[in-house]
Length: 468
Image (cartoon, rainbow, N blue to C red; front, side, top):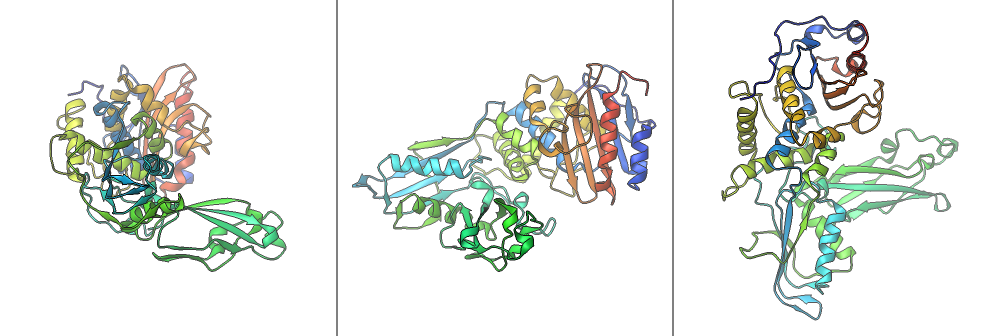
């Protein structure tokens, strides 16, 4: 059990600039929990307001997932995607199947898939006489409705985790104006097999289309994603927008892997006589494997850009790592158990947060500012502290805090945002040179309007060498 400093339950007065900003946002102090304390926990908190109140932290919950992962898996941990070539290659034709087994890689993006297929071609394979067999049995994830959480099924952040997660189950559309043809070229990555993809869209006509105005180009396109076998645009593209990139989650995620792999394989000149189907990997050593970036690199994407599906991949990996000899697939239940047990061993045997999933994209997670403070103290004292801190957005510089108006480069903080939830947690680099832990959570219908209050709290925490 942790021996970290226990924060007093007595609420302290919030700094005047914070109170003023909360008043402007019409958010009462009772809807806010805040904590500012020394990173080493050796002094009483500078600020403790409702620090024991369990609250929804939104994506700040990723701090628990990534801190536990660094501790349990290590920063050099990598995911492997083994590939079997099951049969002889004769005159460029594989007389058998290719088997690809997913083991949870959070970053099996399009470039990595291309390299995987390129490795097959390097073995002399141009035609696969059999099938491409996909094994994603390492994770058991209940079927979900992508629209269930917020009614936005095409937002990539709503993609469900998968042991074989290819390119976040998303399609990236690039629009490039060609004034000479009065149209914009449309490139789709990856090219999805069996899906009609519109290669161009008319440019908007009229003066406003060419005077630099862009506006809501997505609405102007009048995209129709309702048919899994066709992506169509019924509108036009404003020439003044220049080149734009629009990622969407594919409308039919269950068929995405098969369509993406076959589409890319054929675009590379490969032939497939069979089909892409689900199956089981053989129990023999793989022909080759593709390796992910290290965990330390992966959590930079997770925390700086608040990538939900990558966080859930790590979350499920913790469930799998907790029972490495088990033949059972990892599940949300086993991942929750792994995180709870880690918390009980490393922080508190009795005071455990309510954990739903590893990303914070949930209405059921609950954690207090004091608990987050304990987590951040543990991380600060850890040998992997530099990896965690460098994964957090730097205020006013990058990630989800690039547009923050607080003192630039003054803090590394994870952000969280849901409807009626706004949160921050991480480390502040004060003017005195001392490091502090800062936690702030707002659960209120006007939470989105409290960004200025959180910026004011960061500035207040930075100015520890002034009378406050």
